[in-house]
Length: 142
View 1: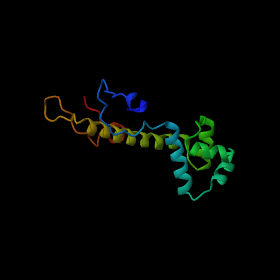
View 2 (view 1 turned 45 degrees about the vertical axis):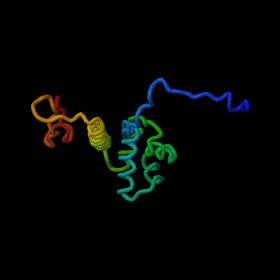
View 3 (view 1 turned 30 degrees about the vertical axis):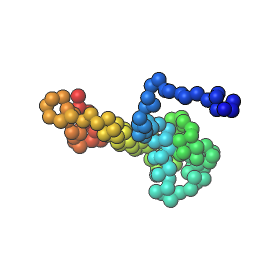
View 4 (view 1 turned 180 degrees about the vertical axis):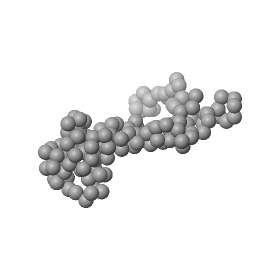
């Protein structure tokens, strides 16, 4: 036998490897949502990044980073960008909030379906989500 063969050992894991769990979508970040709203509105208006940046008195590279979710913009910068798009800050924040609720609900559904713990009936199961609930159709049930 060669030295190489005699120095090899069998490795027996002490614990079994965990089963592959499907990854949940990551928690949405506020800066991503706000940037998505700004970009979507700018593009819907058919305006260029340069045009909106000049109107808002923000540098074009900075506005680009805000739109891509790379920078956390101050409320002053967001208000200026919103105004340049003909919106108020409340409009931008409301649209981002709606998107957050939508993504969070989808994330919760993915988690529930992945766990296989959905019960039914009065024995402690979850009630269906009501489209008439608060927060844009998301109703939390205990």
